[in-house]
Image (cartoon, rainbow, N blue to C red; front, side, top):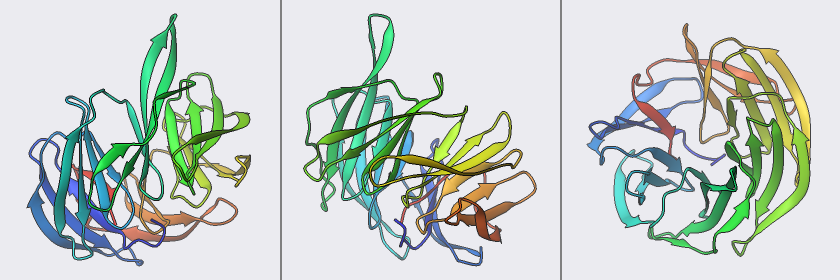
Length: 270
């Protein structure tokens, strides 16, 4: 997604009304297409080359479609997963990690499975379900490496999905500050934010699953949305910005964004 075209989708989950457009490097927003999608999708999950997953937890359905560079949308395959999942993480090369929370002897754990989306939009599970610790955040940080975080305990760990769809735990454990939002654009760097304190921090996950702190500062009330070209859109009460993290984890190349639709869910899908 780092070489994407910053094509955005704006989606009204109540009606399904949808709009696509493009975010230019200078922050200019242009509109491309209006069209309907099915309503009530809980999650919009961009993958590679415009492929996008839509997930609805109420009936465990997943749908796939592809966005073209002109903002058009082609509906592909809809299927039932059979069991409900609480967290879905799209990785590289079509891999998807599905997580459901289970209770065992009064303690929460995660049961996970690896799926794969093929070029024609078919989704298939390629692993049996396997146990993991309980995590509140599961973030793809690049090259199928995953950062896991438990906001209740402040604990974090890293793992990787292998080329055959297996899962490998790096065996690392970290203690983090309290965070409410964790995002990555897939370049190894990670953005952390606590909406209660307004604190922002950045860090990086290495190829062997290690973690290093980079930078932190107070940014006030803001929310973050990763784009498909390695940037983040920052939504603030006064304005909207697009920026990226440099090698030191500091915001750089910041521009003002005007014209992104408001009041709808937005995702960068290509």
